[in-house]
Image 1 (tube, rainbow, N blue to C red):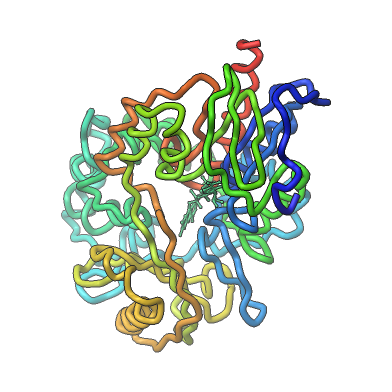
Image 2: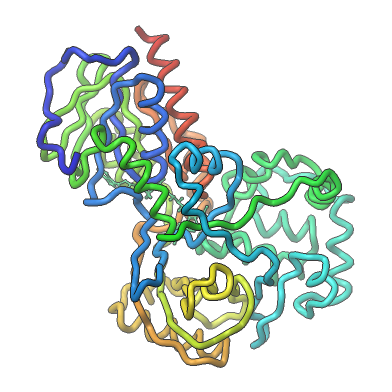
Length: 443
Ligand SMILES: Cc1cc2nc3c(=O)[nH]c(=O)nc-3n(C[C@H](O)[C@H](O)[C@H](O)COP(=O)(O)OP(=O)(O)OC[C@H]3O[C@@H](n4cnc5c(N)ncnc54)[C@H](O)[C@@H]3O)c2cc1C
Protein backbone atom coordinates (compact mmCIF):
# COMPACT_ATOMS: atom_id res chain seq x y z
CA UNK A 1 0.00 0.00 0.00
CA UNK A 2 1.79 3.19 -1.10
CA UNK A 3 -0.41 5.67 0.73
CA UNK A 4 -3.45 5.69 2.95
CA UNK A 5 -6.11 6.60 0.34
CA UNK A 6 -8.04 3.43 0.90
CA UNK A 7 -7.90 3.16 4.67
CA UNK A 8 -10.99 5.17 5.65
CA UNK A 9 -13.60 2.86 7.14
CA UNK A 10 -16.53 2.83 9.49
CA UNK A 11 -16.87 1.52 12.99
CA UNK A 12 -17.94 -2.09 12.89
CA UNK A 13 -16.59 -2.89 9.41
CA UNK A 14 -16.83 -6.66 8.91
CA UNK A 15 -13.44 -8.32 8.98
CA UNK A 16 -12.27 -11.55 7.39
CA UNK A 17 -9.77 -11.97 10.26
CA UNK A 18 -10.39 -14.02 13.40
CA UNK A 19 -8.28 -11.78 15.68
CA UNK A 20 -8.65 -8.18 16.89
CA UNK A 21 -8.35 -5.07 14.71
CA UNK A 22 -5.08 -3.35 15.50
CA UNK A 23 -3.53 -0.10 14.29
CA UNK A 24 0.26 0.21 14.40
CA UNK A 25 1.76 3.71 14.25
CA UNK A 26 5.22 3.69 12.62
CA UNK A 27 6.96 1.19 10.32
CA UNK A 28 10.49 1.24 11.69
CA UNK A 29 11.79 -2.11 12.94
CA UNK A 30 9.48 -2.06 15.98
CA UNK A 31 6.37 -1.38 13.92
CA UNK A 32 7.36 -3.84 11.19
CA UNK A 33 8.08 -6.61 13.70
CA UNK A 34 4.75 -5.98 15.48
CA UNK A 35 2.88 -5.87 12.14
CA UNK A 36 4.53 -9.05 10.87
CA UNK A 37 3.75 -10.94 14.10
CA UNK A 38 0.18 -9.59 14.42
CA UNK A 39 -0.56 -10.65 10.84
CA UNK A 40 0.74 -14.15 11.55
CA UNK A 41 -1.68 -14.31 14.52
CA UNK A 42 -4.70 -13.54 12.35
CA UNK A 43 -5.09 -10.00 13.68
CA UNK A 44 -6.61 -7.46 11.28
CA UNK A 45 -3.62 -5.09 11.36
CA UNK A 46 -3.14 -1.74 9.55
CA UNK A 47 0.12 0.12 9.90
CA UNK A 48 0.65 3.83 9.29
CA UNK A 49 4.06 5.23 8.36
CA UNK A 50 4.75 8.94 7.95
CA UNK A 51 7.73 8.48 5.61
CA UNK A 52 7.68 7.26 2.03
CA UNK A 53 9.76 4.20 2.92
CA UNK A 54 9.78 1.60 5.72
CA UNK A 55 12.66 1.13 8.19
CA UNK A 56 12.70 4.31 10.31
CA UNK A 57 16.28 5.01 11.40
CA UNK A 58 17.50 1.99 9.40
CA UNK A 59 18.47 3.49 6.06
CA UNK A 60 21.05 2.28 3.55
CA UNK A 61 21.99 4.15 0.37
CA UNK A 62 24.51 3.35 -2.34
CA UNK A 63 27.26 5.51 -3.79
CA UNK A 64 29.28 4.09 -6.71
CA UNK A 65 28.11 0.56 -5.78
CA UNK A 66 29.26 1.00 -2.18
CA UNK A 67 26.69 0.79 0.59
CA UNK A 68 26.44 3.62 3.15
CA UNK A 69 24.54 2.93 6.37
CA UNK A 70 22.81 5.93 7.93
CA UNK A 71 21.57 3.99 10.99
CA UNK A 72 22.90 0.68 12.34
CA UNK A 73 26.12 -0.37 10.57
CA UNK A 74 25.87 -4.04 11.31
CA UNK A 75 23.89 -6.60 13.29
CA UNK A 76 24.61 -9.68 15.41
CA UNK A 77 23.05 -12.83 13.97
CA UNK A 78 21.46 -13.95 17.24
CA UNK A 79 18.57 -16.45 17.32
CA UNK A 80 15.68 -13.95 16.83
CA UNK A 81 17.37 -12.36 13.82
CA UNK A 82 18.44 -15.70 12.35
CA UNK A 83 14.90 -17.08 12.43
CA UNK A 84 13.55 -13.89 10.82
CA UNK A 85 16.25 -13.95 8.10
CA UNK A 86 15.38 -17.58 7.31
CA UNK A 87 11.64 -16.90 7.30
CA UNK A 88 12.10 -13.96 4.90
CA UNK A 89 14.44 -16.01 2.70
CA UNK A 90 17.35 -13.58 3.13
CA UNK A 91 20.09 -16.08 4.08
CA UNK A 92 21.78 -15.80 0.67
CA UNK A 93 22.03 -12.02 1.08
CA UNK A 94 23.87 -12.15 4.40
CA UNK A 95 27.39 -10.78 4.46
CA UNK A 96 29.62 -11.68 7.42
CA UNK A 97 31.94 -9.17 9.09
CA UNK A 98 35.44 -9.77 10.46
CA UNK A 99 35.20 -10.78 14.11
CA UNK A 100 38.82 -10.78 15.16
CA UNK A 101 39.70 -7.11 14.64
CA UNK A 102 40.34 -4.68 17.50
CA UNK A 103 38.14 -1.76 18.56
CA UNK A 104 40.21 1.28 19.55
CA UNK A 105 39.95 4.04 22.12
CA UNK A 106 41.41 7.44 21.15
CA UNK A 107 43.04 8.34 24.44
CA UNK A 108 45.80 10.88 25.16
CA UNK A 109 46.27 11.50 21.44
CA UNK A 110 46.70 7.85 20.32
CA UNK A 111 44.56 4.96 19.13
CA UNK A 112 44.86 2.17 21.70
CA UNK A 113 43.12 -1.26 21.44
CA UNK A 114 40.29 -1.76 23.91
CA UNK A 115 40.83 -4.91 26.00
CA UNK A 116 38.00 -6.89 24.38
CA UNK A 117 40.07 -10.05 23.74
CA UNK A 118 42.65 -11.75 25.93
CA UNK A 119 45.39 -10.73 23.47
CA UNK A 120 44.43 -7.06 23.60
CA UNK A 121 43.81 -7.18 27.36
CA UNK A 122 47.45 -8.18 27.82
CA UNK A 123 49.03 -5.94 25.17
CA UNK A 124 46.99 -2.72 25.29
CA UNK A 125 48.44 0.38 26.93
CA UNK A 126 44.96 1.88 27.38
CA UNK A 127 44.98 0.63 30.98
CA UNK A 128 47.82 0.45 33.50
CA UNK A 129 48.73 -2.96 34.97
CA UNK A 130 46.98 -1.87 38.16
CA UNK A 131 43.85 -0.99 36.11
CA UNK A 132 43.94 -4.39 34.39
CA UNK A 133 44.39 -6.23 37.70
CA UNK A 134 41.46 -4.31 39.19
CA UNK A 135 39.16 -5.69 36.47
CA UNK A 136 39.93 -9.21 37.72
CA UNK A 137 38.52 -8.31 41.15
CA UNK A 138 35.03 -7.88 39.64
CA UNK A 139 33.65 -11.24 40.87
CA UNK A 140 34.19 -9.98 44.45
CA UNK A 141 31.93 -6.96 43.92
CA UNK A 142 28.17 -6.74 44.47
CA UNK A 143 25.42 -6.57 41.82
CA UNK A 144 23.85 -3.29 40.66
CA UNK A 145 22.27 -1.09 43.34
CA UNK A 146 19.04 0.87 43.04
CA UNK A 147 19.60 4.42 41.68
CA UNK A 148 23.19 3.67 40.63
CA UNK A 149 24.50 5.45 37.51
CA UNK A 150 26.27 3.51 34.78
CA UNK A 151 29.57 5.17 35.75
CA UNK A 152 29.15 4.38 39.47
CA UNK A 153 28.25 0.78 38.66
CA UNK A 154 31.16 0.21 36.24
CA UNK A 155 33.69 1.98 38.50
CA UNK A 156 32.59 -0.12 41.51
CA UNK A 157 32.69 -3.35 39.50
CA UNK A 158 35.81 -2.84 37.34
CA UNK A 159 37.67 0.18 38.77
CA UNK A 160 37.67 3.84 37.72
CA UNK A 161 40.30 3.42 35.00
CA UNK A 162 38.36 0.75 33.09
CA UNK A 163 35.09 2.63 33.65
CA UNK A 164 36.34 5.97 32.27
CA UNK A 165 38.73 4.87 29.52
CA UNK A 166 36.93 1.87 28.16
CA UNK A 167 33.61 0.51 29.45
CA UNK A 168 31.69 3.74 30.03
CA UNK A 169 32.44 5.18 26.55
CA UNK A 170 31.89 1.78 24.94
CA UNK A 171 28.43 1.48 26.44
CA UNK A 172 27.19 5.07 26.44
CA UNK A 173 28.99 6.32 23.31
CA UNK A 174 26.22 5.76 20.80
CA UNK A 175 23.52 7.15 23.09
CA UNK A 176 25.51 10.37 23.46
CA UNK A 177 24.87 10.46 27.21
CA UNK A 178 27.51 10.82 29.91
CA UNK A 179 27.71 7.50 31.86
CA UNK A 180 27.37 9.65 35.00
CA UNK A 181 23.90 10.71 33.79
CA UNK A 182 22.70 7.25 32.76
CA UNK A 183 20.89 5.02 35.24
CA UNK A 184 21.67 1.30 35.25
CA UNK A 185 18.03 0.47 35.89
CA UNK A 186 16.82 2.04 32.64
CA UNK A 187 19.81 1.25 30.41
CA UNK A 188 22.61 -1.26 31.04
CA UNK A 189 20.45 -3.14 33.57
CA UNK A 190 18.06 -4.19 30.80
CA UNK A 191 20.92 -5.68 28.78
CA UNK A 192 22.29 -7.49 31.86
CA UNK A 193 18.80 -8.85 32.65
CA UNK A 194 18.42 -10.01 29.09
CA UNK A 195 21.77 -11.84 29.26
CA UNK A 196 20.75 -13.41 32.55
CA UNK A 197 23.59 -11.69 34.44
CA UNK A 198 22.76 -11.08 38.10
CA UNK A 199 26.12 -11.37 39.85
CA UNK A 200 29.56 -11.34 38.24
CA UNK A 201 29.80 -10.25 34.61
CA UNK A 202 33.30 -11.74 34.27
CA UNK A 203 32.30 -15.13 35.68
CA UNK A 204 29.20 -15.29 33.46
CA UNK A 205 31.28 -14.50 30.37
CA UNK A 206 33.98 -17.03 31.40
CA UNK A 207 31.35 -19.71 32.04
CA UNK A 208 29.82 -19.12 28.60
CA UNK A 209 33.23 -19.37 26.97
CA UNK A 210 33.88 -22.66 28.76
CA UNK A 211 30.46 -23.97 27.71
CA UNK A 212 31.29 -23.01 24.12
CA UNK A 213 28.54 -20.37 23.84
CA UNK A 214 29.86 -17.94 21.24
CA UNK A 215 28.89 -14.35 20.56
CA UNK A 216 26.68 -14.39 17.44
CA UNK A 217 28.58 -13.35 14.29
CA UNK A 218 28.65 -9.81 12.90
CA UNK A 219 26.48 -9.56 9.80
CA UNK A 220 24.96 -7.16 7.33
CA UNK A 221 23.32 -7.73 3.95
CA UNK A 222 24.82 -7.36 0.50
CA UNK A 223 22.61 -4.30 -0.14
CA UNK A 224 22.81 -3.02 3.44
CA UNK A 225 20.82 -3.36 6.67
CA UNK A 226 17.73 -1.92 4.96
CA UNK A 227 17.29 -5.33 3.30
CA UNK A 228 15.66 -6.50 6.54
CA UNK A 229 12.95 -3.80 6.89
CA UNK A 230 12.37 -3.84 3.12
CA UNK A 231 11.66 -7.59 3.22
CA UNK A 232 9.37 -7.19 6.26
CA UNK A 233 7.53 -4.44 4.40
CA UNK A 234 7.22 -6.52 1.20
CA UNK A 235 5.74 -9.42 3.20
CA UNK A 236 3.08 -7.09 4.65
CA UNK A 237 2.75 -4.37 1.99
CA UNK A 238 -1.03 -4.64 1.75
CA UNK A 239 -1.31 -3.77 5.47
CA UNK A 240 1.12 -0.84 5.58
CA UNK A 241 0.27 2.69 4.40
CA UNK A 242 3.42 4.70 3.62
CA UNK A 243 3.37 8.52 3.40
CA UNK A 244 0.56 8.46 5.99
CA UNK A 245 1.40 10.40 9.14
CA UNK A 246 -0.97 9.78 12.03
CA UNK A 247 -2.13 13.16 13.37
CA UNK A 248 -4.26 12.06 16.32
CA UNK A 249 -5.87 9.20 18.20
CA UNK A 250 -9.44 9.53 19.46
CA UNK A 251 -11.39 7.38 21.88
CA UNK A 252 -14.54 5.78 20.51
CA UNK A 253 -16.18 3.86 23.36
CA UNK A 254 -13.80 0.96 24.02
CA UNK A 255 -12.24 1.41 20.57
CA UNK A 256 -9.92 4.01 19.01
CA UNK A 257 -10.00 6.13 15.88
CA UNK A 258 -6.60 6.58 14.22
CA UNK A 259 -6.67 9.88 12.37
CA UNK A 260 -4.41 10.70 9.43
CA UNK A 261 -4.68 12.91 6.35
CA UNK A 262 -5.99 9.86 4.55
CA UNK A 263 -9.00 9.50 6.85
CA UNK A 264 -10.02 7.67 10.00
CA UNK A 265 -9.49 4.03 10.85
CA UNK A 266 -11.23 2.42 13.84
CA UNK A 267 -9.49 -0.34 15.80
CA UNK A 268 -9.71 -2.35 19.03
CA UNK A 269 -6.06 -1.71 19.92
CA UNK A 270 -3.29 0.72 19.02
CA UNK A 271 0.45 -0.03 19.08
CA UNK A 272 2.61 3.11 19.23
CA UNK A 273 6.16 2.70 17.90
CA UNK A 274 7.19 6.32 17.24
CA UNK A 275 9.75 8.08 19.43
CA UNK A 276 8.29 9.33 22.73
CA UNK A 277 7.68 13.02 21.74
CA UNK A 278 5.39 11.96 18.86
CA UNK A 279 3.64 9.35 21.02
CA UNK A 280 3.01 12.13 23.58
CA UNK A 281 1.37 14.34 20.92
CA UNK A 282 -0.81 11.50 19.68
CA UNK A 283 -2.01 10.53 23.16
CA UNK A 284 -2.69 14.11 24.30
CA UNK A 285 -6.35 13.96 23.23
CA UNK A 286 -7.23 10.79 25.14
CA UNK A 287 -4.90 10.56 28.14
CA UNK A 288 -3.22 13.78 29.24
CA UNK A 289 -1.29 12.33 32.23
CA UNK A 290 0.24 9.59 30.02
CA UNK A 291 1.09 12.18 27.35
CA UNK A 292 2.78 14.37 30.01
CA UNK A 293 4.97 11.43 31.11
CA UNK A 294 5.97 10.57 27.53
CA UNK A 295 6.90 14.19 26.83
CA UNK A 296 9.54 14.07 29.59
CA UNK A 297 11.95 11.54 28.00
CA UNK A 298 15.15 13.10 26.68
CA UNK A 299 16.72 12.12 23.38
CA UNK A 300 20.15 13.05 21.99
CA UNK A 301 20.35 13.96 18.29
CA UNK A 302 23.21 12.30 16.44
CA UNK A 303 25.09 13.28 13.28
CA UNK A 304 26.15 10.48 10.93
CA UNK A 305 28.97 11.48 8.56
CA UNK A 306 30.24 9.15 5.84
CA UNK A 307 33.86 9.63 4.89
CA UNK A 308 36.00 8.17 2.15
CA UNK A 309 39.64 7.66 2.98
CA UNK A 310 42.74 5.68 1.99
CA UNK A 311 43.35 4.93 5.67
CA UNK A 312 44.00 1.19 5.90
CA UNK A 313 43.92 0.52 9.64
CA UNK A 314 42.53 -2.85 10.60
CA UNK A 315 39.75 -2.70 13.18
CA UNK A 316 36.09 -2.15 13.87
CA UNK A 317 36.67 1.54 14.58
CA UNK A 318 37.32 3.82 17.54
CA UNK A 319 35.64 5.64 20.42
CA UNK A 320 36.94 9.08 21.36
CA UNK A 321 37.85 9.33 25.07
CA UNK A 322 39.87 12.58 24.93
CA UNK A 323 37.97 15.82 25.55
CA UNK A 324 37.58 18.56 22.95
CA UNK A 325 36.26 16.53 19.99
CA UNK A 326 32.80 16.59 18.44
CA UNK A 327 33.26 13.04 17.11
CA UNK A 328 31.93 10.31 19.44
CA UNK A 329 33.50 7.55 17.40
CA UNK A 330 33.95 6.01 14.00
CA UNK A 331 33.01 2.68 12.41
CA UNK A 332 35.55 1.33 9.94
CA UNK A 333 33.20 -0.21 7.37
CA UNK A 334 36.27 -0.60 5.12
CA UNK A 335 37.93 -3.07 7.43
CA UNK A 336 35.06 -4.67 9.39
CA UNK A 337 32.69 -5.24 6.45
CA UNK A 338 34.98 -4.91 3.39
CA UNK A 339 33.16 -1.77 2.23
CA UNK A 340 36.14 -0.27 0.41
CA UNK A 341 37.34 3.15 1.58
CA UNK A 342 34.20 3.82 3.72
CA UNK A 343 34.31 5.17 7.29
CA UNK A 344 31.31 6.34 9.34
CA UNK A 345 31.77 8.98 12.03
CA UNK A 346 29.19 9.77 14.71
CA UNK A 347 29.09 13.41 15.72
CA UNK A 348 27.46 15.35 18.53
CA UNK A 349 29.39 14.29 21.60
CA UNK A 350 29.91 16.96 24.19
CA UNK A 351 28.67 19.85 22.09
CA UNK A 352 25.22 19.16 20.70
CA UNK A 353 25.07 22.65 19.15
CA UNK A 354 27.52 21.47 16.51
CA UNK A 355 24.53 19.65 14.96
CA UNK A 356 22.71 22.98 14.43
CA UNK A 357 25.46 24.01 11.98
CA UNK A 358 25.02 23.55 8.21
CA UNK A 359 25.75 19.99 7.00
CA UNK A 360 28.92 21.16 5.24
CA UNK A 361 30.34 22.45 8.54
CA UNK A 362 29.43 19.24 10.41
CA UNK A 363 31.12 17.21 7.67
CA UNK A 364 34.20 19.47 7.67
CA UNK A 365 34.70 19.02 11.43
CA UNK A 366 34.16 15.25 11.28
CA UNK A 367 36.67 14.90 8.42
CA UNK A 368 39.26 17.12 10.17
CA UNK A 369 39.02 15.07 13.38
CA UNK A 370 39.20 11.77 11.46
CA UNK A 371 42.36 13.05 9.72
CA UNK A 372 43.90 14.11 13.03
CA UNK A 373 43.08 10.80 14.72
CA UNK A 374 44.11 8.43 11.89
CA UNK A 375 46.75 10.61 10.20
CA UNK A 376 45.07 10.07 6.79
CA UNK A 377 43.01 12.53 4.77
CA UNK A 378 39.28 11.99 4.33
CA UNK A 379 36.62 13.31 1.97
CA UNK A 380 32.99 13.85 3.10
CA UNK A 381 30.46 11.68 1.22
CA UNK A 382 27.30 12.48 3.17
CA UNK A 383 26.02 14.14 6.35
CA UNK A 384 22.77 13.20 8.06
CA UNK A 385 21.48 14.45 11.42
CA UNK A 386 19.01 12.08 13.09
CA UNK A 387 16.37 13.72 15.30
CA UNK A 388 15.11 13.21 17.93
CA UNK A 389 17.96 10.68 17.81
CA UNK A 390 19.04 8.19 20.44
CA UNK A 391 17.16 7.63 23.70
CA UNK A 392 19.32 9.33 26.37
CA UNK A 393 18.46 6.78 29.09
CA UNK A 394 19.30 9.51 31.58
CA UNK A 395 17.52 10.72 34.71
CA UNK A 396 14.44 11.62 32.63
CA UNK A 397 13.81 7.88 32.20
CA UNK A 398 12.62 7.66 35.81
CA UNK A 399 9.35 9.07 34.37
CA UNK A 400 8.69 5.49 33.22
CA UNK A 401 7.72 4.62 36.80
CA UNK A 402 4.67 6.91 36.42
CA UNK A 403 3.57 5.69 33.00
CA UNK A 404 0.10 4.20 32.90
CA UNK A 405 -1.56 3.76 29.51
CA UNK A 406 -5.23 3.52 28.61
CA UNK A 407 -6.52 -0.02 28.12
CA UNK A 408 -6.03 -0.89 24.45
CA UNK A 409 -2.95 1.28 23.88
CA UNK A 410 0.47 -0.40 23.89
CA UNK A 411 3.94 1.04 23.40
CA UNK A 412 6.56 -0.93 21.48
CA UNK A 413 9.65 1.25 21.37
CA UNK A 414 13.18 1.64 22.66
CA UNK A 415 12.12 3.98 25.47
CA UNK A 416 10.26 1.20 27.27
CA UNK A 417 12.54 -1.69 26.31
CA UNK A 418 15.95 -2.44 24.70
CA UNK A 419 17.15 -0.10 21.93
CA UNK A 420 19.05 -2.41 19.58
CA UNK A 421 17.76 -4.04 16.43
CA UNK A 422 17.36 -7.45 18.08
CA UNK A 423 15.56 -5.84 21.03
CA UNK A 424 13.13 -4.20 18.58
CA UNK A 425 12.40 -7.49 16.77
CA UNK A 426 11.76 -9.32 20.04
CA UNK A 427 9.68 -6.46 21.47
CA UNK A 428 7.50 -6.41 18.32
CA UNK A 429 6.79 -10.14 18.69
CA UNK A 430 6.09 -9.84 22.42
CA UNK A 431 3.80 -6.85 21.88
CA UNK A 432 1.81 -8.72 19.22
CA UNK A 433 1.24 -11.65 21.59
CA UNK A 434 0.19 -9.30 24.41
CA UNK A 435 -2.22 -7.34 22.21
CA UNK A 436 -3.89 -10.49 20.89
CA UNK A 437 -4.23 -12.13 24.30
CA UNK A 438 -5.45 -8.93 26.03
CA UNK A 439 -7.96 -8.33 23.29
CA UNK A 440 -9.29 -11.91 23.65
CA UNK A 441 -9.75 -11.18 27.35
CA UNK A 442 -11.66 -7.94 26.67
CA UNK A 443 -14.16 -9.49 24.22
C1 LIG B 1 22.81 6.06 14.12
C2 LIG B 1 22.25 4.83 14.76
C3 LIG B 1 23.04 3.70 14.86
C4 LIG B 1 22.53 2.54 15.45
N1 LIG B 1 23.33 1.43 15.51
C5 LIG B 1 22.83 0.28 16.00
C6 LIG B 1 23.61 -0.92 15.97
O1 LIG B 1 24.75 -0.93 15.50
N2 LIG B 1 23.06 -2.06 16.45
C7 LIG B 1 21.78 -2.10 16.94
O2 LIG B 1 21.31 -3.18 17.34
N3 LIG B 1 21.02 -0.98 16.99
C8 LIG B 1 21.51 0.19 16.53
N4 LIG B 1 20.75 1.33 16.54
C9 LIG B 1 19.42 1.28 17.18
C10 LIG B 1 18.33 0.73 16.28
O3 LIG B 1 18.62 0.97 14.92
C11 LIG B 1 17.01 1.41 16.64
O4 LIG B 1 16.75 1.29 18.04
C12 LIG B 1 15.82 0.83 15.91
O5 LIG B 1 16.04 0.73 14.52
C13 LIG B 1 14.60 1.72 16.21
O6 LIG B 1 13.48 1.20 15.56
P1 LIG B 1 12.04 1.76 15.94
O7 LIG B 1 11.09 1.16 14.98
O8 LIG B 1 11.76 1.55 17.37
O9 LIG B 1 12.11 3.36 15.77
P2 LIG B 1 12.29 4.22 14.44
O10 LIG B 1 13.26 3.59 13.54
O11 LIG B 1 12.52 5.60 14.91
O12 LIG B 1 10.86 4.12 13.73
C14 LIG B 1 9.76 4.93 14.08
C15 LIG B 1 8.92 5.13 12.82
O13 LIG B 1 7.77 5.91 13.15
C16 LIG B 1 7.50 6.78 12.07
N5 LIG B 1 6.66 7.88 12.54
C17 LIG B 1 7.02 8.95 13.31
N6 LIG B 1 5.96 9.75 13.52
C18 LIG B 1 4.90 9.18 12.89
C19 LIG B 1 3.52 9.52 12.75
N7 LIG B 1 3.00 10.63 13.30
N8 LIG B 1 2.73 8.70 12.02
C20 LIG B 1 3.21 7.58 11.44
N9 LIG B 1 4.53 7.19 11.55
C21 LIG B 1 5.34 7.99 12.25
C22 LIG B 1 8.89 7.23 11.64
O14 LIG B 1 8.87 7.76 10.33
C23 LIG B 1 9.66 5.92 11.74
O15 LIG B 1 9.63 5.19 10.54
C24 LIG B 1 21.21 2.51 15.96
C25 LIG B 1 20.42 3.64 15.85
C26 LIG B 1 20.92 4.79 15.26
C27 LIG B 1 20.04 6.01 15.15
